Length: 191
Length: 207
Image (tube, rainbow over all chains, first blue to last red):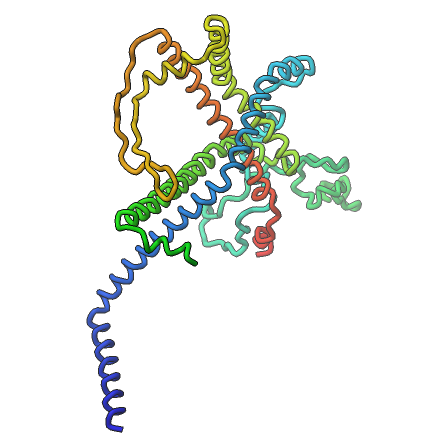
């Protein structure tokens, strides 16, 4: 019993010493841990690089074959290019990097600049949703800038019933109904 | 099991050589790993040419289908490659072809003067090759018996000019081929990112 008490008390004393030393040398321990972490990270990157290098060496025949294939394809393309060039002259298709897609894109950009349309208008969904909770905070010139789209200019409406002439009194221009006129006041200056 | 006891029989110098060999192999593999990183970085930069060529088209939504995008981007990449690499390819092919013609006309198809000329110009290195575990490997630093030397003979001039004039455009052509691969990889990557249907993007519409 006496021995057990001695062992327990000595263990408790050692634990106390450890806790005390940890409190005293906490900063030192932190520094040591950080240094160890850095060392571990550098070892990790080293082994990662070695692993990647080993994979590259093992798979190098495949990469070399892939590269040779592209070199052969490139050589063939250069050799056959004059032939394609002459056929393109007869076909009327120009072998240029820019083609009708680029021309259309430039036209759209030009139109957007002229009409002050942001190019994002061509993107399907906006990245940020509009903020509907904006409130008027006073002053006549403090409104947030409204959209600068010309009325019904984009996208072009192909509906034959669509009235392109903007009428401020017509709330439903898509319907193209004539404005309401009161038959009683007809010819008396009223509606 | 007896086969593994040869490790015990190793002398101190053998053990040192073995450790040095392992370290050298690890170092070479690590260098290959870093070369892969460098090549990957260069190819990423080379692939951005496709972004430059297709930016306006995608920004204005002229092309909104994956198939048409791939077709158009590949067409642009091919023409860009031909435009960039026809000159180095032609110079290199003409130089090598001219050299081969010269050898067949003037030297009766004997290419040995080329190797002799380069042998006389290059330094003579004596590697101390010894047996190590029945493998013949260099076990000491090499000794330079003779250094670089240019004697100014006709053979040396022809060999040197041929190699310089044909190798520089050839290297440029190979880099262009690498860029061509990088662009095709970028096209594939854009197919999987730009034309991906991400439902998370729709969440903005319902906010």
